[in-house]
Image (cartoon, rainbow, N blue to C red; front, side):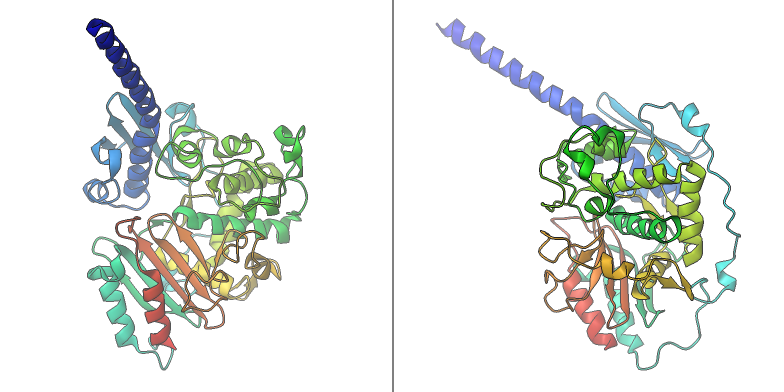
Length: 451
């Protein structure tokens, strides 16, 4: 009898052990992929040190236990954990990409099309197209108080965050700016999901300059034999596609699999079945935004045209000349997550939307596009428009309902207050739940100081 019990217990133990090993094995591409991709971009796109990134950005969960090798000559990063490993490579113009399916030789065989945008020295141009600022700031601003806010945020960990960079615009010009040691005005920093708002801008340009109709069905071949055929780009931009999706970053979810274990992010998201009829249910989905990027690439029918849309029609026309919109291994821009830009470039992006889609006197986005962008998606309870977050849901009760903002993982934010002509950019590493920045108090202090 005892022997049978022991055998049964051993069988249960071995089954549990096998299950745990199987699940852990499924996590290895996510663990090593996260480390390799983020370290590679931080080193080769942002110019940060390996030690600094490992001590801060990668110092959590299983990620902290990865062993990372950075090859500065070959511009690759290999990350290992237990028996798993992942490799990320840097390519000029395309940023860093995980090897998933294609070999390094195959990916490096694709070269980024040469940009026809003129090379400019932004230090010789006036703001906003350049970095040259007027000697006198907007009159009536308490610059001393704003500087105290900036120093507290960046240097002293005020507002419960860890900010790398901080920029405040008022009436279109920077009135406060601060950077953590090792970070500067020329450092490209990660957007995370603020990239979704850049996808909104690319879509607006497609509507204005390429005749795209976002209210027509997307037309993906794999959707034609079921109810997914009625999904439109508008549904995807407003997070109302109805596609099944899990956006939980804390486990083996759709979003973590897409970003770290797939070669074609949009194909992975598009393969999901419908959970709701399109337009009837709001649910935040990074996959939806990457499908939009695939649709844009398909509509332009040329990789060169797609990359020119990013580089010339958006970045060059708004002074964001150094920004990088990374792609997945299939070549599609990762509109859900991977824009790298300077703090001033993120401020320029805010200025584009504060000025109703006009930048430096040139209309970039269609008339009425910002109004469309800030119209609440049904089912979002006033909290989301078209790839921008809205304060109509009163997440920030002390701030105007007309405020809208870009929100990225680990505390990336661009706040825009159109009536007050204020924009605030915060970049850094302030992860939930232990160290989430108190953005409400920060914004309240900034607005009160300016107004």
